[in-house]
Length: 491
Image (cartoon, rainbow, N blue to C red; front, side):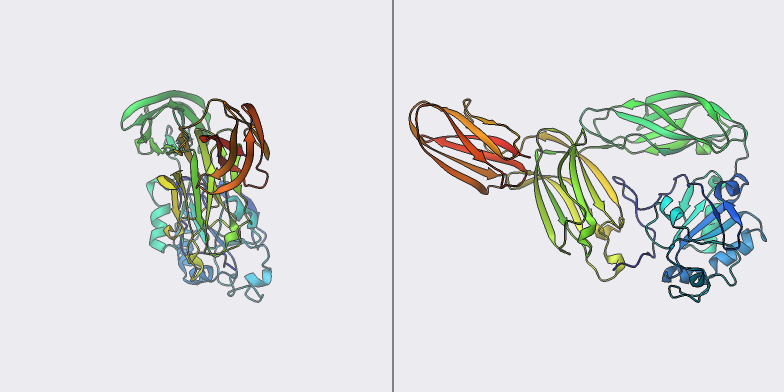
């Protein structure tokens, strides 16, 4: 079983959900009482101008104990805390609610030692809810939170490196009367086809006076593409999500935003954004996943632009570790789709961080018959990227090029799509022997039936696909030596 900690900060992935709150996120507020009965509110400290270091740890966590006993936090608190320059507050949050007060004091069964004796900063116990609110997935996770509410994952840094974060100009309390600032991009991160992207960005008031108006302009490679005159009423440190406009892109944009109205501080007036264009593919894709040591954590689905699931593998379905699985998926038509991959634990397929385990891989590939023609998405757990959920878009622009040149106008398959039994209806100009067979998209025959000698005119045959998996199949009809082919979708 995995140990629930990591020695390094998890890497982020741009096309999916994060394993924990990324740098630049707004820190969730919390109020909690420490082991001495003192109540602490994060935003109250921030409003007082303090930078706050949050240490999410567990009493049994070896790396947490090593960092605790290194003395970094003790030195930080002595130099920059209440008895030093009074710039920061440090809060340790014991985040495994199954541990006990005895564990904190070093006398329990799930502890590395005495965490309380000699500790000069605040300790909050039973902080699992706060741990979850910050979307953490491992111990220790250490953040520095600036008065602006913006956090940085400072990790197991040295005293000097911690100081460089909370003493940076960008991490100081508000001092100017008029200071609008731009934060994270909040608009569409993925567009498909000719659809325009909605461009929006976080606006924050870093001024001492309420912010009531400003102009925000969006650029692509320095060319203005949208602008808005925002009005509102933001208190100091308050945020607003501002839609700047919409834009369509023929190529991946270099997107930036600027506050272009008068402002007391130009240093925080810029932000960047990323809009990815869905890669083009065929209507036949192949999903390939090589599991890591915990296959039951992995699942995936493909959905259309209305959210209808086309194909999926539920978390818990895979049982073989370090094994490659392949699924062929026929997309019902051209259009926009999303592939979403899940990891129940939140570490993606980055298994080697837990010991001598093989990292997993994943990919989605456009196919033309048995030939791979494009790459929609690839992921390697060895990259160190962790996720609990990630999504990538794809646009099916071409029908997989399986030979259908001999389709006869008289042939019809209905109902199509079908849940099982469907009908093949066709006309013959003369009496003839006929057969019907069904192939999947990699050329395997899954059904055959001899229809015997049929009379001239309209004929109909039942086709029972109830025993085959959902997907797209090719129905080949041979009547009197003439062959025709049609597609049928099994739901």
